[in-house]
Image (cartoon, rainbow, N blue to C red; front, side, top):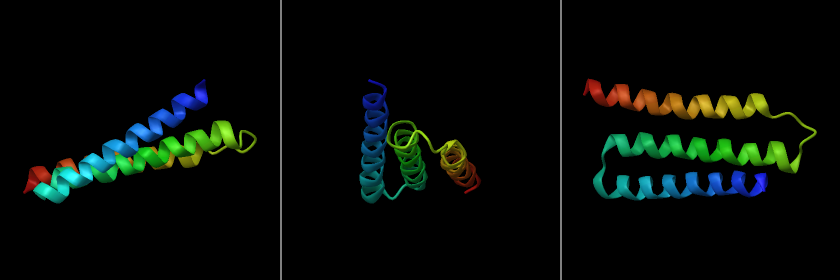
Length: 86
């Protein structure tokens, strides 16, 4: 059951990223770009969570997962700050 939740979270993040990319290509708003990059990173984080806990539970990928999550959120924060300055 947990594996299904991990996969659904990954799919949801990928769908959100795809919708944000599509909206960015139509509107060219910078905030949509940074949001889409953030959701790509969060989707990668969710895929790594599935791989870590379901596919290869004997290998600890916690640090890699944490780094991808922090980078994704940092990109979003950078985009928010940069967009406010312009």
